[in-house]
Image (cartoon, rainbow, N blue to C red; front, side, top):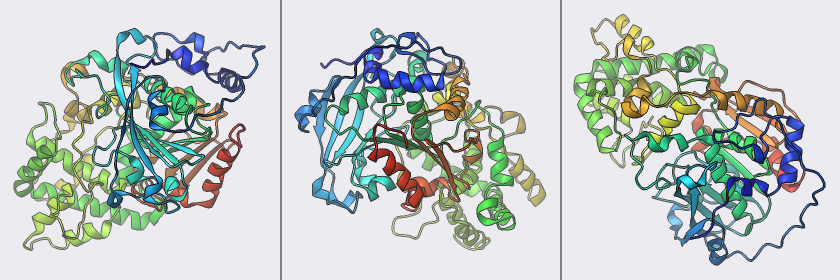
Length: 529
């Protein structure tokens, strides 16, 4: 079994440049100051080293599967095949130009104390021989259906030939301890953004031994948060960091999220009058879904169960159905924003097939071959466990408070007598109570230091950072506080939903100014732009 680095060893690589950047900010931890808990950025003193000469740059060995297998911490490498039919890579290269691998790294559970045990982490690599490496962080799992993300590249990788790397986030998918049990809290103390950043740093440090030195790191949503965290702890891991639609929350019950969805979202993109009409369409559809509970609830709950979603004992079928209908507003605004489809379904009221169309909108479970009104944001069920996500939300990432008051008031105004199973006194922490087992929920508490540290990072970082937001995205109100652009730190906001960033090719990367900033950062790898 290959050796994995102690945290002090891996940070020592490039120490001089890291310390130089840290001195400018006055807020990052020196390697020797790492303690048994995750370091807080705010107020940390820095020790410096002097008189050390920079090591000459090593000649990279020729890339091969054997070179990958020789990297420290690598336990095995799989050479895998991606079908040409699933390939969605860059038009600047052919399918045959690409080599695809899954690399397995042994990682410590706790980077401050490697003696506590290890787990195996999967990393996908699509190698093209390019002189730029894009490290994409999803924040979740690698998709076993395609596994190599070359079949699902983001916009930058489509428009540029890159070596494309993506790591499964710790404790997601197959990158987890073999005996991890969602009911047992014993491993969850190790699921932190800090430990994940150390995982990624180890991976990047090792892959740099066989890949060129120009690195870009990016991710969206939870992956966007991870991208910012990486810059905060390991600013030399990439020449440019591009976090997208990254919400940074100060607690597990942010209030502004649902208020925006029902009162203000879309105003800037569509204009206040048109946006208000769209918001009403969404609410009208939700009212109709509750009124037709008898025809829809059992069918929807069966679909949810068949696709692997699990809940705790507090989630009765009535509550699960209410929660699905509540989430319809979030999914609609987060993804396609296809309001014409909602209008078409509402126009069918009273006709044969009306409840079928409501079902398709709520679940996306339309029979194959038919036109779809899918608002679910996904075309296939995702049979993966999101339990670690909710754990991390409760611990440090934060979440939003559910709010049924808008739907409750609309049902009362409708006068049909239809009601919700979720009462007002049940809304407190409802999302997390539905997904987290009581034996875990009772042992975890929220620590807002990550939120505070990222605010400090955004104001002081010397990394090249390009932050991308969609102004009509549901997460936009939960962004970091706005900071003025600096020579190395830029924020761009366009009228897009999350769908525009993640699921389509028409996103912010199509803008020339953003492309040029990224390209310039990669052309001059040793200097910020």
